[in-house]
Amino acid sequence: MYSAFQKSVEQLRQHIIAETSWRAALAQEPLPAVLLAATAGADRQRVAAALQRLGYAVTEVADATGVLAALQQKHHPVLLCDLPLDAEEAAMLARGLRTQSFGGHVYAIALVAQDSPGFAPHADDVLAKPVGKAIG
Image (cartoon, rainbow, N blue to C red; front, side, top):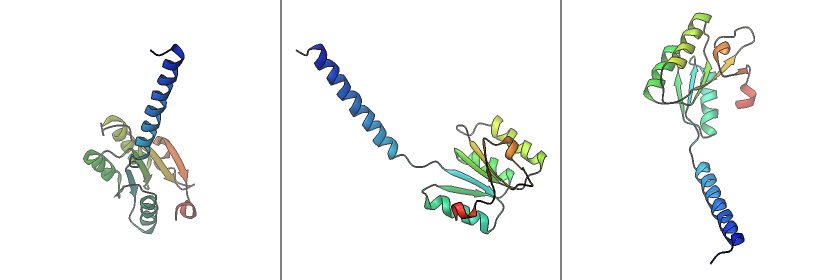
């Protein structure tokens, strides 16, 4: 027969086992799939290669329509958008991201040049260019 103290110790032990098992399982989870939206070229290839080296699965698209089509096919929890979008195109993409169901929230990150905000006003987060040395 367990005393109250022994029961508490046993509960704590079970909690630690459950917590460490959960953390171990979490460590085994694959990194999220990243949807890279950028015009074709060396910059897009460099960003994709850097993400892949870090262990991310990367899908590349070249325009806003491609973003929405790729998300219809497979859920990508992260969108890295480096597209030269005017205000109308950026708003259209944002509307599509927020109104359509893609299997969960898509965390949108805009890569922007100082003189062209593009998708930044609609993104969850913004990275300023150049980022080449940081990722290349």
